[in-house]
Amino acid sequence: MTEFPMLTDGDVYSQFDYEQVVDAMRDAFAERAAGTLEAPPRWRVDAGEGDLVFTAGSATGPANATGFRVYTTHPGSDDELTELVAIFDATTGAFEGLLVGYAVGGLRTGGIGGVAIDALAREDSETLGILGSGFQARAQVGAACAARDFAEVVVYSPTAESRESFAETADGEVEPPVRAVDDPEPVVREADALVCATNSEEPVFDPDWLEAGTHVTTIGPRFADAHELPLAVVDRADAIATDSLPQVDAYDRPYVASGDDRERMIELAGVLENPDLGRQHADDVTLFCSVGLAGTEVVLGREFLERFA
Image (cartoon, one colour):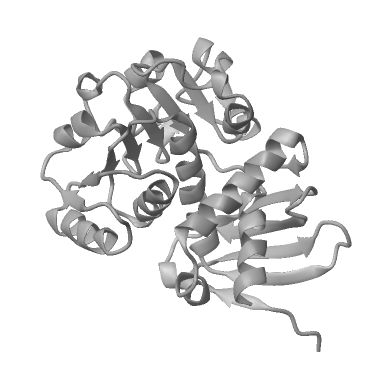
């Protein structure tokens, strides 16, 4: 029987660091800009009560990684569901290993968020604001603080126990102090970089709270009929970026950035290659809509296999 390396979430979480994650995502976006990262939109296969969802990508430049991630959307206990990330050598096609669990998917989303904040937030940004206290919010904080030297992190979520627990945990993982507050308004007003990481289908803050010069990232619901981000922020944004325009266009629902806003949306890889496409002035409002660039989990998965397997 052929043996191959396999990593679990426990293996990853016990050894990774956010600097490594952000660096791997920078490498992936460098390949995207160079045209060596193939990243088609995700697709679904009808599987009874749920779907089998695939993201596949191939980085044929220095990262030299190809493969796919697959997960299901079946209702039921989270303990019964998982994700698989399969990694192959992009040059030879040789199978290199498997990662089982949610770590790679969650960390690559956080890493993408960190790269976006570094590319689009003001150079003098000091306060990172977080709306949400779940798994994705934690990865966003870790990666953002690895990408930038924030002075503090301020977090709000509706449940006091959740936000206090989040603040205590995150405070032990990042350099700046993490503070929980009991109202979203000060988070939005104080933030130089604001991350919305909720599952809300209604706006989670008043757009009038948003100060000039703020960068905003949204990773939760982002559709015209269900969105955590106020639509007024999309219209107000001076620069709108995403990680994958093909994924935005592949959705079967109208996106938050539609019409003229969709026409001026650019890819993060383009901003990294040409910063003039992003923030132009200190008082610009910049927006990053995270949709998941296929292939990034493959690049990160290979990095983990090389270091930890």
